[in-house]
Image (tube, rainbow, N blue to C red):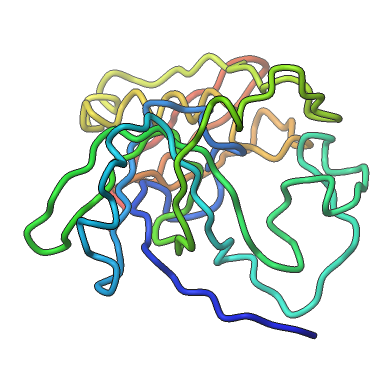
Length: 229
């Protein structure tokens, strides 16, 4: 098998320490904020010259928790309930011959950190904390946007279909700048699509917390909020 070396340019810092709960596509939760920190070799401000003129960026990254030595030609997309099998190249499954992901994010700010050099602040990222970034490219609406495109089995964006109920005392513990993002993530229903037990308690890590909740019908109820060191 022919192989090529590829360099890690940066890592992303997000509020997701585990895969469970991460939005299944980028851009579904605009209130999520993340920071892209470059590796020392690439902390040259000249490499970002002109970037502030773009509103969105493409991130090319590694599914670092899905690297495996073998591969399967078919996978089970969550969108289809985890039952139907489709070709891996007809899906965005992380279980691929090359564990590479692609996400479009909004560029919020290019800032300079005294210790880390230039840092990109982005929103809408669907990446695990610490994910390696292989490349960053500007999003070009005239070339990248195709309103007439057909989306196969994923024709429509998932709607925010759950009402989230959280006691005021628990909500008050979440920093204001992260509260809306957490509620938006929960409203997307983090559970596997084939789960429907209203008595089951789920746990999701977000920022510095473990959030425990149940889902009954159209209502997600936050039961507990624990510090997650």
